[in-house]
Image (cartoon, rainbow, N blue to C red; front, side):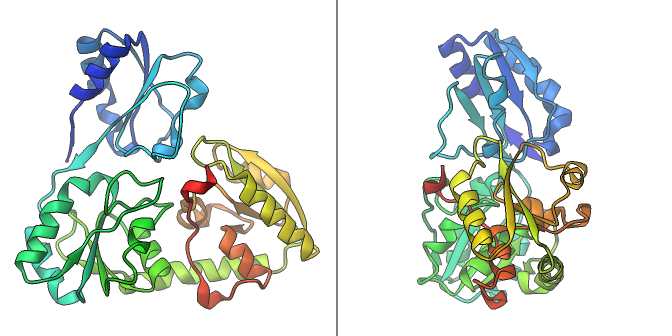
Length: 331
């Protein structure tokens, strides 16, 4: 269950006298979108248009609708401070309400202090309680500050682990509050430190070493397949928070230096059929770092991250493998 409080957003819509509002809701809350829309319309006087397209983060604000609406209400993610929009975008948190007291006690023996505590966006409200809980159990705890893409101390995004980086010299392990394994594996690869996942939807804490081998085997296979590629499409994301033209140009320069053919491609939504029709031997995504990892089975041709391309071209060793990240200076 998630707690969504629209009072602040409604007050802001009334203040700016927004007539038409785009409502953007993440996939896990889409079925409640009509309730949110009714609440906003009833209490703000604004007309609400629900955005049906998938929403994967604060980088995914529907800027293509800015000429049709006066504002956007974006539920479920924290703002990215380094991003600027031409229309008001009001971010509304969706906080998890799942208890985790028993898991916290079980995690103590898995951690090596000092411990860095991290959380994905839906679980930020649980950070203080977890820190207090660990300290009451006798552990030394640290919270890290992120760069300009991070709104809150201790927050990690699927594209940014700077809150963990800032602590890497001061801690011996991390406890990450969140669902799934992607964020935790990213932190582990970026810092080289042990990461334990505190997932409110599970009964037991999970150490990332238990699950990382499958992902790394998949990525190694993709990299091996790409070794035979001669032509590369370098994909630039059209989403406002994923545009990395400078990075794409750097990769094209590297490919040409290594005597491979490379072309820049603009794309909003990644589609295997679109890539198949373009006919390149392999592709490199400079957009959301999760696409190549999470959707690996969807693509016939290798879809690489920038760091994986560096391994293909021999300028990075497999032993130095990391997930791709977006930083504040790339916006």
